[in-house]
Length: 243
Image 1 (cartoon, one colour):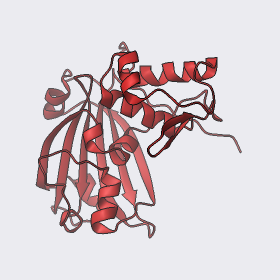
Image 2 (spheres, helix red, strand yellow):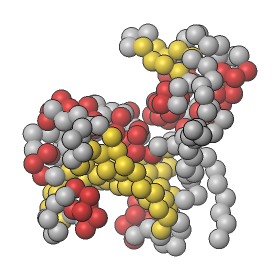
Image 3 (cartoon, one colour):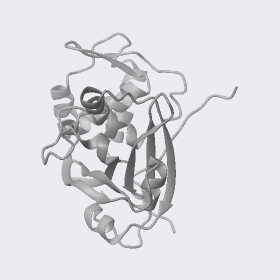
Image 4 (tube, one colour):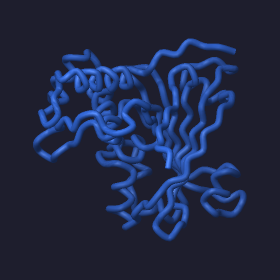
């Protein structure tokens, strides 16, 4: 079954900024326009610009210096093939910079795949923090963060307010946990009834399910991030060298 694909607004902003860099409009070494100027230029929300800059920074197009702004680096290696890592923004950006709302935060019966990935007993409870992310008002991602109960204690993950720091930095500050690497699994399926309602998609519409397990330096699982993406609003890209 075919379906029309329209890139989300942040991806359109990323593509245009790359075009401006390659054309020389934004020359290497120059200061990129401020977030406020980019909001005005593209006619999108600030969270959309923040997400766009994060993607450009991850792929090496720009670098950000605290208190100075973002500087153009130029076209990086492998720039012709884009990478999309849905979970990276969820873990690396402050919640307040991601447009959306908090759906729930509390102790829940963990599904079997979560207990398996976290090394918990089957039927165990875990802590869930679930957010619905939007792109200029349209729901585009349902992100569920699962943590062992002991790890959630002493954090602000139960707060009804969006956090002013990233998930990764919050865990590092509150629990002295440093993430080392992540393992990502992507599959396609139909949404559950709850997912379809939150994302505003049909019950038989395809969704992409990205499940990322984060590990510490000892190889022990720290948390699981489960992201559901409407299939007609996202594409997954990757790039890698031949060795």
